[in-house]
Image (cartoon, rainbow, N blue to C red; front, side, top):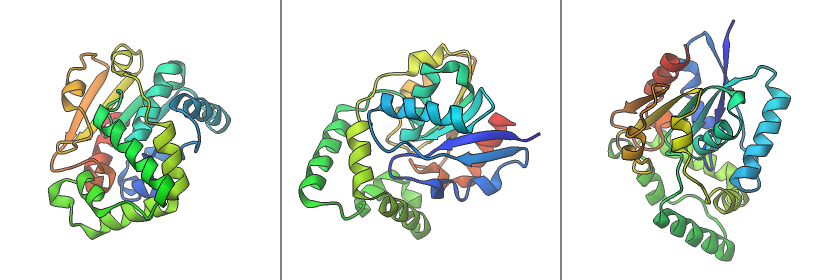
Length: 233
């Protein structure tokens, strides 16, 4: 019997994020790409997601993977409803409050977009998301731009307004009864490496991907798939 794993994308991402990962998964695993509820605060999104899981996922507890913002939402769901989670994998996220500079930057982006409109993710921002060795790989850049375009202005505003206020969930994950796995690129500047490495629970495993930035499912799909296969098989 195959093991079903549910996948949550990050901000301004869709199932194209996983396009090169899913074909590399073990035949024993059955991946299902979920979408994030479009509106509300983190708590609102988690409540809607929990309702969706109860409706569409008959088997509980579930195996859940979240990338970036989806990793934070998956963590929030896990600590609020631990009985629903069997195994949790968090890719490219530290489930903590965002740094003050990131909150300020998001507020500026929201203000600018509301005033002038949104013309798509800047090339400079894409470069910041990638390891230097991947910054000029056009296939990755094109995928990021295409996901961003499909998401559009309203999704960006919804996510930046609703999902910016966050609390620290690390201590609760560290003491949780379910197992967790953190996967992150060694050059991911959006992840707090020190905080993740301070976790002490035997139920938590850490996996670092070499020569990889924030967009690990696009930058290193084989390494991400290997991590998923090891953890869930």
